[in-house]
Amino acid sequence: MKENVFDVLLYLFENYIDTDEASQPDKDALETELERVGFPELEINKAFEWLDSMTVVAEDRSAENESSPVGAMRFYTEQEMDRLGVDCRGYLLFLEQVGVLDADTREIVIERVFALDEHEIDLEQMKWIVLMVLFYQPGREVAYAWMEDLVFEDMEAVIH
Image (cartoon, rainbow, N blue to C red):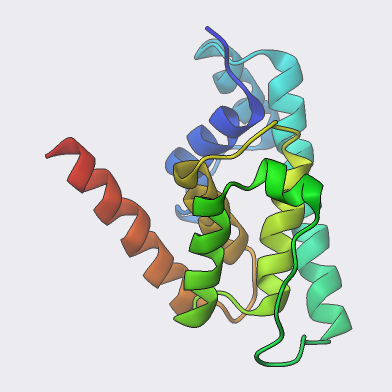
């Protein structure tokens, strides 16, 4: 079974991140469970580092409190275009246009994509990354709820 960091993050997010804090197990218990269900230790450690870095990124961004100018255009580097296909870049633009993402949050999403160290991210993975980023952003609860609806509606469409 070839599991990667994204798979571990997805498992954690679906099962623990968005639940009551009082019922969440500690990190050691989570590591034990993740190993029990078959995730490699290295990928588990990388996933926890990714989540720990997420909180640092979110705190750094809110501490800076600097926003990009409204209507500013984002130009992607060649490396970013390789990692984020046209569909992912288009989806980020769409989310900005409808107000789910602002420029700062978009940059956090891109930074988190690169922190995954995956060669290329597909659209479904991008949606989950956006959802995870929004979860950690203070004051973005409405955007998170909207994105959560988008992600789970898409999942229901695939199932039916």
